Length: 113
Figure 1 (cartoon, one colour):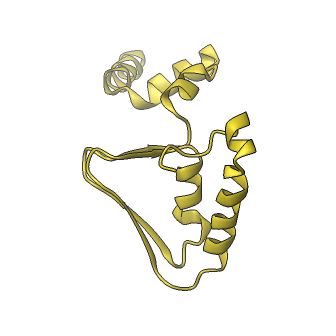
Figure 2: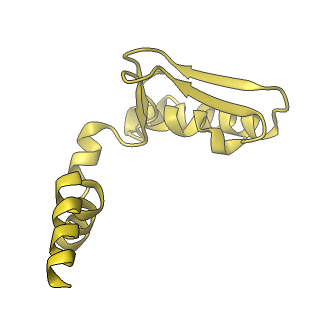
C-alpha cells in the first residue's frame, strides 16, 4: 500500500489501519538495522510515512531519500490544502521562511535604528 492509510471507510473495512499498526508495533521492538530508501521521483505519504518514520525506533531505523526528487509527508496535497491557516500564523510563517521578507525585515529594523 504505497499511498498510505487514509482512515476512510474502505481502509477501515479492509483493516488497513489495523495492519499498519501491527507494522509499527513490530518496528518498535525490532533490534536489527532497518534502512528505508525513497527512490528518485517516489513519494510516500499518509500512514505509509507514519509507519516508516525513523522516530518509531531511532536506534535501528534510518531513512534516506534520493536527492531533489523524492518526497514524503504525513498529509496528501489535498489534505494539506484544506488545513486552515490563521492569518497571523500565515504571516509569521511567511516572515520566517521567505527570503525576501526576511531581507525586508532586516532592512526595516536597520532603518528604525
